[in-house]
Amino acid sequence: MTVGNIESAALFDTGKKGRGLRAIRELSAGEIVFAEPSFSAVVFDSLASQVCHSCFRHQAKLHRCAQCKFAHYCDRTCQTACWDEHKQECGAIKKIGKAPNEHVRLAARVLWRIQKKTGIVSDSQLIPVDQLEDHISDLLEEDFKKLQTNVHNFQEYWSHGRKQHSVDYISHIFGIIKCNGFTLSDQRGLQAVGVGLFPNLCLVNHDCWPNCTVILNHGKIELRALEKIPEGEELTVSYVDFLNLSADRQKKLKEDFHFECICAHCSQHIKDDLMTAAAESGGSKPSAEDVDEVTAFSKACLVEIEKFRLQGNFHELMKLCHECMGKQDNILADTNLYRLRVLSVASEVLSYLQSFSEAAECSHKMADGYMKLYHPNNPQLGMAIMRAGVTHWHAGQIEVGHSMICKAYSILLVTHGPNHAITRDLESMRSQTEIELKMYQYRTMEDAALKKQPVTSSSL
Image (cartoon, rainbow, N blue to C red; front, side, top):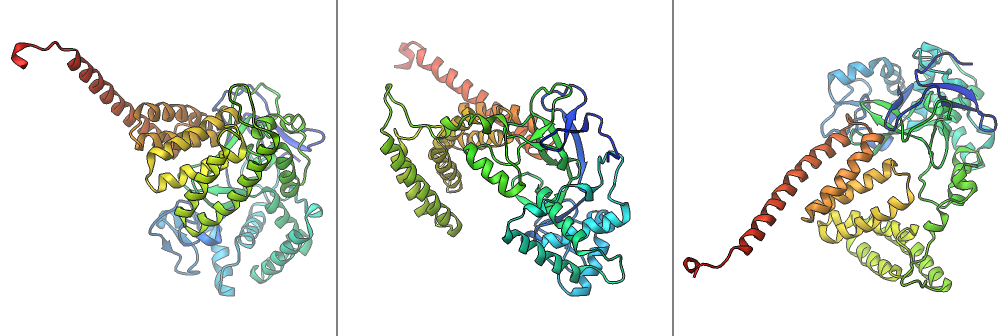
């Protein structure tokens, strides 16, 4: 049942994939297909006192709800804006004396809103939220047991005297959240801070090489076109990071979203060869045995590197990164996944340790590899190039830094738009590096001119 409409997209039956959205007019790269507020959303348990429960901003000093003592807000404005959603939650938390986990809190918010709005909150919402897929029958035994535990905790949490729901219906809501919940990021888009349900976004199907991307901007998700999309073409986003082999992406999609991916990049294993490539020098390649040995060593190193990262033991982490990168040289290509993963960790940690010259070298190699693998307007590519540009800037390599920042800016204008906080920050950096570059070029020309001046008797 279709109950609403979006100006640029329409619901349609895709056939094998079920429901989907398609463009009802030609869309340009960077264009917002639609923006959508959450039907309901909650902050992660681990960040409940560090992130505003209304605008999802990360703040140093938040005001706590005086009633439940759980919810936190930037100020009175945020608290007032969220009260309609929080008042039922507030009473329930006071009743049982503690807040349940984020899954139970989100399910309760969804059901409170369904009761009040019958599952439709705006004219542009295409279907009622409880008509989304739950895939409960596809859940693994372990996941189904977790769902049952959440249903039990929910029944304790749900306010007495209000409309009661069957176990099947509550389970259905939890299934919808598990399959369709969208991770919310903070105001800079750098940290995951919560989870929400966006009914229209849930209708956009997956493709490993999508024509759209999703970002959170000013409390709403925006579906943005990554390229020119002809009228009638299906709108797609990627549910997983492309930087995995096609078989690994298919496995994750099957486990998490319960479908077999048959997109062109998976069916034809596009770019798998680059992601597993061996280095080539002077027309010769290393032996298959050497490649297998270094690949196995890299896999093992990445496990240990992650342990050191969690421990904050950056000295041992970098020692292992250097050893691993040394073995990878002349064996694994610059697009090989394991080389890129080690470079990513190394560049991040070296920047943290303010070893900017070495961090710049690692980030540049990583960005070069990413550009050969990702869609040219992939948001993760844009962010990686931005970090590489900033690292070069901090290393005093202003020309390269400015060039990479400009490249990142052109990508993020498409993926995030000009008004997103990250794009605005990048625009400021672009302007600053441009000024510094002009000053550097002026000094270089001045020095060159002075060196060319002839020696006169007055200067002797």
